[in-house]
Image (cartoon, rainbow over all chains, first blue to last red; front, side, top):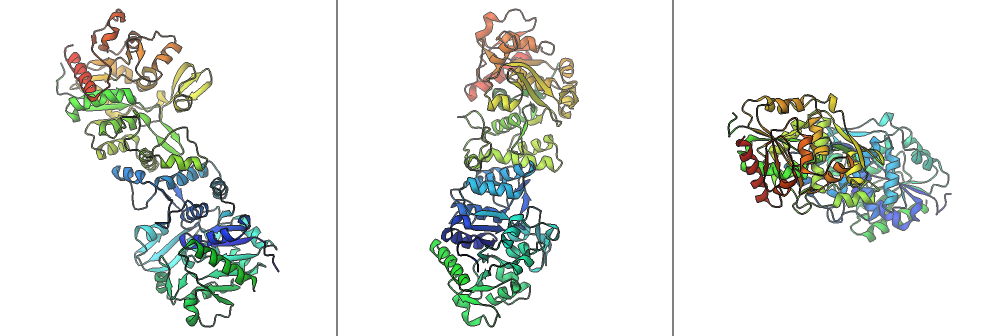
Length: 314
Length: 314
């Protein structure tokens, strides 16, 4: 039996996952939470190391996120992009002026020999975040998509082509040789660990890159704490982004049940939306139905509480 | 005899020199002017290649310069610097959000193998500048100052320490091995060359790094066109910056005459301010006295016309 005050590990991608991460951060003792971020979307753009999911988590957990766009920073200005356009620079990936500071400073510190973990930990402290924020690895892992338009890197697919190409296969280049961030493995081996949460991020683009790291999936399957996933599918549809489209292209039913089966070997509990209660079928796994749409901050806290409560009942 | 429609070459540092360069650009056929920029102040800051004098010239000649500050871009925003400060980044060198685009895009293109000349030529065309803008060299030259606080690189001396340390000696590291930008040497060898102007920039920090390049001083001495310098000293004082302070520290009289003597071996004509007419002494060189303070755009054009007129009378 794990303690109610024990540490909680959340695995997250960007926007959707960060909402639940924020909910957990607000309802748990803040130091109890460690959030593992997907870095498969990281890329070098304009010579700068951009870590989209880490940054969304940094901004969301520190309250710097932009509630209107759902990405980037609040109070952002766009003078850089305008000036870059006038010099003929690439403008398909939007970098706000304040956001740029994160990329420039991270790139400078990486070049100076610091690890992504060290830099991220310093950034989150400076931004007042008391939870730990862990890149999934300090080694490079890059998500590639085999599509009907050829092999595309993640941002080329996701931003430049707006997820329009049909996905045939997804590769996590470098994952087999990458070492999971050591604090993740230590947390999973900690007998005091209370809970692992797979946030409602895209299973294929945001969570699978983390699970593709050596020993990580086995450590999740073996860990003493319950592993709980929250469905990113509500009422047979994805809340946002290309999750549903990709599931169809990969030959999966667009259903909350398909996500649960995808994580089957590591899950102890599945949290799905009440809207999917009638069609979930037999998952051979404990399931709780709660409202999972997180439109407001109160929704995020409520879902976090529901996850904690459901896991405590196992 | 060189033609009145022939090309004009101007050697310039930042703010003061750029004012006369703009005057020349406005009174000459725009394609007739080539401006050679000091790159001894260039440095890598936050991982970005910053070329302060090239950028001042780019912004001044394109009308993007900030008339209030005298440096940087008009309509600038500062979101990047604020965000950088919150992440613990270095903030002693102010990089505006729009200005940053120049540094990021230049750094990216340098890393991709383009030369500083190629990048500068593309930038000036995109910003609508019809004059040529030439970095003095595509090879690195770095101005160092031996001071009473030790050996300092240029920006450390000039920006971080606000030119406070006493200068003992100035070094142009790399100059002996640097190749002058080929178009400069071609322009000096061109029989149609109308005029060479040493703009009223700091002789030691802005013009001497250019003159320190191999063969450049000899090519200036040998070229068929008149070489004219405009005094940066008015009434025994520098208009701006540390010129007068450095002259004193180097044991030179703070006088327009001392600048003329500094350039003696290459000069055909010296343009000084009427305020220095009584104290210039015998320079063994033609001298013209005209108002050299450039407070307004009209002043810049008037000084440019006066320089062209005086040179034509040789």
